[in-house]
Length: 431
Ligand SMILES: Cc1ncc(COP(=O)(O)O)c(C=O)c1O
Image 1: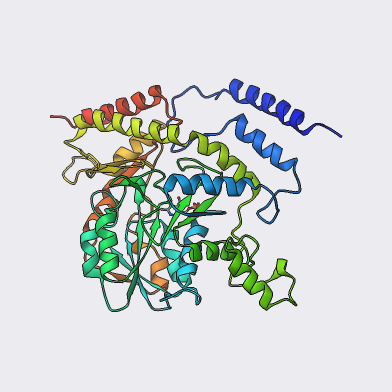
Image 2: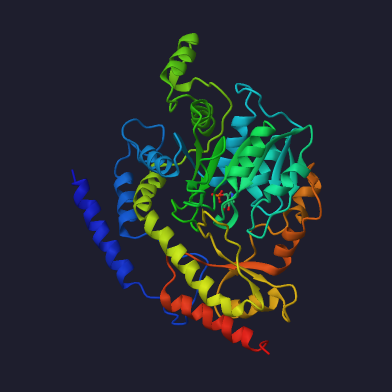
């Protein structure tokens, strides 16, 4: 029988050599939207997990790395529960299944309205469509996030919840949003999938609402390759998340009293396969949990690198402010900088498209600001929704905005290259 530790050690050393000696044959500078932010430590953890076949999924017993990661992340965000899923999209779907579940008080029902920003990510909205809820799209502010001052205009007798998307890592004004929700008896789900570590007024986003969600997809602040998490301070919602994520079974439920009560009521059914509620298979696997634990150790450093890079661009881009609008950063906030947004001013002598083409031709990767104006996407021709007002800022961002990469993999050489290419492009328009 081989020695597991020895195998893992050897693999780790080999992979380290591989990564250390890896060289891109193409010597041109490239500035990608994301890059590899894991090394031999994550690979070693995955190998260690695969060499432990009795502990590969959330269904196994013993000390699960998935649970270790859930606890670390929940402690950081400041919630009682973190329930890992296989993606951020699944986390959003679980969140709205919880709020629509017949077991909860005052639950959401088909036809109820949920206020959501028109600038979003599609899976902030699709859970609503899936459950027969009606999105009510409102405009965003210059910080790319739902404009809290628009909430009142969206309110109707059917309004039951707000889907607060902290887009690009910018934190929404959660004090005013939560006050509004309280006054109007609305549920709040925070989609913090792009906002790892973002803070409003000293408190982390994802911890304000009834539920919060995160994504750990490759391009995010830390990544488990694919992965997500549902956050909540509500014990009942936490256990419902565990049940819904795992096909309706009760295996991972924390409330032992509740578990016993149901199991005792149905002694004729094998408790391992006792279906307590609705469910899906949104389970993460242990390899993702193991990667999460290693990535967690890097989180503070990775976030700080994004913040430092943003500060560098904010400073350097001041000289471009005739043409490019600096991002709006509100007082008492910490932005988590999912990307660095570029907004070409309306009166500029060039279009955003021409700048994008120039950057792309110089190997600086760009992308639209998430969905752009989501109301324009064909999916909305199929499902019922409402739109509030003219969505002026969303439309402006859709036409004139894009973002460039801002992650821990970007070097000083790359960031200087980015600034030099902006200078080169903009110089032709300087009077
Ligand atoms: C705001 C937002 N919500 C939800 C998601 C979905 O996350 P995932 O890609 O892990 O499904 C994303 C993905 O990037 C996102 O940006």
